[in-house]
Structures are given as C-alpha cells and as structure tokens.
Amino acid sequence: MIKQEELKKFILDLGVAKVGFCNLEDLLPEKFQHLKSGISIVVRLADQIISDIDIKDGPTHTYFHHYRTVNFFIDQVTLKITTLLQESGYLAMAIPASQSINEEGWEFKGLFPHRTAATRSGQGWIGKNCCLVTEEFGPRVRLGTVLTNMEFQYDEAIEISQCGDCNACVKACPTIALKGTIWTPELEREHIFDAKACSSHMHQQYQKIGRGSVCGICVKACPKGNKVLKR
Image (cartoon, rainbow, N blue to C red):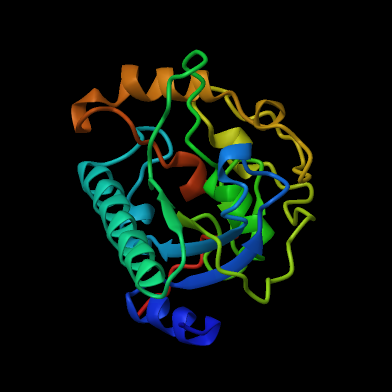
C-alpha cells in the first residue's frame, strides 16, 4: 500500500506545481460517494505566454496551443495517479481536465468542478473571474482532480476570498460576464460568472486562433498573478 507522502512525492515529481488532498464525500453525486477523497493538482501556466495576451485583442495563437497542451499534460498526470492508486489496491477516477457534459441542457459544466476540489484542499480561493486564484501564481494555473477511496490526512480548506475591493478582472472582461461577486463556498457559479456569455464571446471573436475556446483576459488582468520575473 502506498503512503500519502510517497504519493505526494510521486505527483510532484511528475511536474505539477502543487498538490492537495480533501474530503469530498458530502459534495459528490451518490454514485461516486464511495470515492470520498479528492486529489487536486495545480499546473502553472507560462508567465511569458500569459503576458502576451492583449487586454483589447484577446488571446494569441501561442496561448491557445499552450492551454490545450497543459490540459493534455494534466490528463496524463491524473491517468498516472489513477494507475498507481489502482496498483496499490484502491479505486480511483480522474476528472477530465476540460470537458463539458450535456445531460440536462448545455450548462458548460463538467463531471465535478476542479475548483471545488482545489479550494477544499487549500490550493486557493475562487476569484471574481471565477478562476482559482493561488497565493503563489494568482489565477495563472490549470487544475486536475482525481477521486479515490484512499483516505488521507486532509489539507485545510480555503473558504475566504482575498479579492477584496479589486475588480481588475471584472473591468477587463470584454463580454461583461463577470459580476464582481465575492466568492463563498456555498455560492453557485451563476452568481459570479455568466458561462454562456463567456463561451459565446470566445466562439464568436476568437475563431482566428483555433476553435475559439479560450480567452485568458481575466487571467492576464489579475494583479495577484501579475508578478512576472524580469531577468
């Protein structure tokens, strides 16, 4: 049986920036409640690529490629975690890095929200841009989640936003999809963010860079992440 510290080292050695462990039993759909533990991984995005995003013109071709590459990397990492847990005698399931499931109308939601696992495991808080904001990297990150029946010493959840009066992302959003709401764990996404407005704008305005499924303006605008090292 693998120990938690061994598992954590294995995950960090795969190249992720942060990893945390949380109990999700009270939030999971009934059919997944036996997988009560969540493993949340954080992968840092490239500061140079984020900095090249133009607040007026939107994402670049390089950002579009970077976004998709990081998602692929996350799926490979969570697959390796799942495989290791299974080899150790546990059940495990990776949540896809980026996937919308259309079961009850197109609501732009996945199987389980990565941000919930991330806040529960102490990785950061949900910003006014509806992205996870970390202390180290701001919102310049992508997330992955593995559900498992292995039990851990769980990390302390973050339940308080540190956005305060800052509205940089709200002001920068070209489609007015951000409502300027301070996040709390009980708050539904719809009170913070209009997912349909965001998605429609991306598909209409950014087809030139690919499938039009990325933007990044609110990520670029966040002062918490705007700490590019100058060499």
